[in-house]
Structures are given as C-alpha cells and as structure tokens.
Image 1 (tube, rainbow, N blue to C red):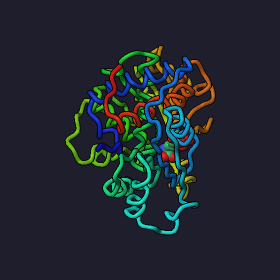
Image 2 (image 1 turned 90 degrees about the vertical axis):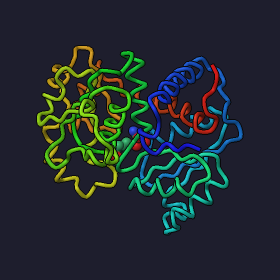
Image 3 (image 1 turned 45 degrees about the vertical axis):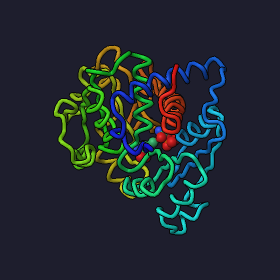
Length: 307
Ligand code: CP
Ligand code: NVA
C-alpha cells in the first residue's frame, strides 16, 4: 500500500505514468466519455483548514470515477473534540477506501497514515502541497512540453508550495530560483527531509527580479498561509517587494508562464495585470487539480492501468 504524503513519495517513473494517465483522463472528461474505474469506492476527505479547489476537485473527481465521498471537518467531527488522530485513522480507514487530509503539521498526516488501512493523500499541510505541484507540472507540460531543464522562479514565502517545488525539481530535473524576504527562506532540511541536496535543483536570490530573469515559469503564493494569520501584519510589511509585476514577467523568457495555486490577492503577491494577463494559466492550473487527482486516486487504489 502506498500513501502520497509528499512529492518525494513517488519516483520520476511514477510521475511519467501519472502525468500521461491524467492527460488521458482529461481527454475523456472533455469528450463526455465515462471513466468509471472506482465504482463502489469511497474517499474520505478531512479538512482541518478551509478549501475551495481541493474540496471540489477531489469530490467531483471521485464522482466522475464512479465512487463517492464523505466530507469531514474539524468542527463537525470528533477530531475537533480531541479524538486522537490514530483512533480516527483506525476507524475511518475501516469504512472507506482512500483518505485525503488537509491539516496543519506534516507529523499529523504521517501519524494518520501509519494507523490507516488505506492509502492517505496530502491535501495540504503547513509543510507540503504535493497535489498542487502535480497539477502545476501537468499544466506546464500541457502548455510548453517537458519541464526537464527548465527554470521556475518562486517569488514570495518559503512555504508549503516552495518546499514542494524543490522536491519536484530534485526529482524531475529542473531548477527553482527562489527569492524570499529575509526570515522567510526555504528550510532546506525540511524541504528535503534532511537528505543530501542536489545543488542543481535550486538557487537562492535576494532580489525577486533577478530570480525571474530567464525563467520559463514565474510563480507565487499568498504572503500569509493558512495557520499563520497572527503574523499577517508583519508579513505584509516584509513581503511588500515580493509582488509579481509586469517588470518581473518582462525579465523572464518571452514565452514564460505565470502560475498561482489560488486563492490570490491582487495587489499583494501579484498585480492584476499579471494574474489576469495573457501569460497567466491559473484557471487551467485550478482545473487540472481534478484531472491529476483522478489519476492519483486511481493509481493508489488500482496501480498502473493499461491504455
Ligand atoms: N490551491 C488550493 O489548494 O486551493 P484551496 O485552498 O481552495 O483548496
Ligand atoms: N500556501 C497556501 C496555499 C493555499 C492553497 C496556504 O497554505 O494557505
């Protein structure tokens, strides 16, 4: 049994399969063709933080595969009344086939997974957001072909998205140019779980404009992630110069794409002219969450499928 708790849980070969499978699943969806590979299977979705895309993409995706979902939040389950995560895992995994969790610390999802009888998917933790990066890479490939050897500029917080980009770069052979304000740097130990770091997979820049130079993809995220709201005011000051604008996009490759996992704050981490401009692929990126996660759920439950 496999879990998907961070991007590094799969090999490059598994990603080749998943990305190709997601393309097939998307094509069938666009052609109104049924793809009922998970009939009678149930996905439990546990949300300890808010969500729009993750909920809709997993829920709609599971229905499209012929399965069903159970939606739980901290407030309406015993999780909010201190039932141990281990007990919740034992119980929920006896009645469902697959579990997706959005929570705070990565250790919590790891504890759940180690007591679960069924595969567990990370739907975002403070440390990682692997389903999003899977969708982002799928989106890049759809628009520009292979991401191997390309440069991704990360402008902003050294957060769950940044950590996951680094894991993906290491595994799939591209480079991330990271520019964060002082005090918000990526934690290498955390991103790579203390494993030796391939120096080719990322480069740190003080100046966000420098990080964007020659990039094939420019991407950013909110200044304040969920769970860090108490730091909102100090973050607004610290991140003021880390706003993706037209000058940064102009310093990237002329065909560079812009991505943002959403939700976005126009005028904060990105200017409206960029996110609503011609280089932005944020709506494809959001939609592709569903297609890649359908491939992921199918893979975790059935393994590789022919055709
Ligand atoms: N990008 C993303 O995970 O969005 P939600 O928080 O809306 O799920
Ligand atoms: N880094 C953001 C991503 C939201 C999808 C957060 O964790 O809130």
